[in-house]
Length: 392
Ligand SMILES: Cc1ncc(COP(=O)(O)O)c(C=O)c1O
Image 1 (cartoon, rainbow, N blue to C red):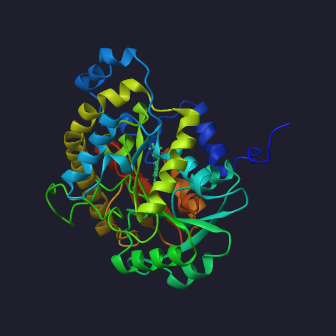
Image 2: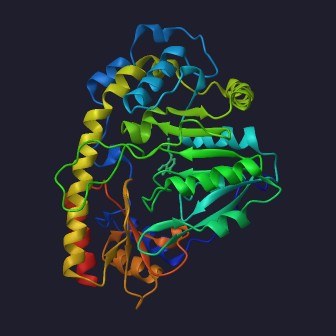
């Protein structure tokens, strides 16, 4: 009865079964995968932000498929503060970045066509594309002390059915950014294949402190918004910029050749008009919500600093454990000794009531890797590390 886009539930693996058992047994679990800011004491929305949602103008419904002009101006002002020029006419509001992906897949690809996505990366690309009948073709990021684009792999990934390439800056969970030469290569391949460029910049406000550094100054990571040769769609949202995933607001900023952008905007407007998914109270509150980002981002920086310092102390005591180099984002990738495979490491930790993600969750290609969330409360993070250290 159901379409083939909806997956048939796969049998849970040993790790998922054990997690279920531990939860049912009421175990007190140390969850080092928690990346929801509202569950780790980092909610960005306080009383003033929630009160802004009660603006009496919210009683009227006058939807604009691209999002209200005032809300789009607030998004443009956010970029202006980072020295990036954005006009409100090139902004489209959506209910989340996930919805932005769905809209862009519908805009750019017909069923059976392809989008390219980095590997390892965010595991939601596949199901989001599958739900639109679109296929994801991976292009490889390779690690040799730093993450790099596998240039030949990228060239081979492009084909006659490629309609867009996704880049995640910084990538989740590797925390790496493409350098300018890598971006130039990606852009020229997109141009040659008449493909769009989707730049997921949701973690762009969350640069890591320099090693051993004090709480760093705010520093933004590179954005692809600017003069571009191909239609480029940069994604951001309240989830990561303000710590407000529950308020359901994201945005797409268009860059690139004028005519192609106008064409794309008209298509996006048509798609967005089918759903009108952004709520009026959130649009009205947006300037107030965005103003709260500075406090939220400062608290995240302090958390990243504390948890990275704990991780590095642990790696100093246990040199068989290493943390892969990264520049930003909310996750750290650990490389563990090869005496167990990563599934076994994750299982052993779960037997000690510690939840971590094995690398294959994000399609790491080799070696035992574990991925930890860096926004977990520092006491919880330290307890989890103690158990990892004891296991090592
Ligand atoms: C790379 C990346 N993009 C997008 C999202 C989804 O963000 P949103 O809450 O705006 O849908 C996430 C969530 O973790 C993510 O890691």
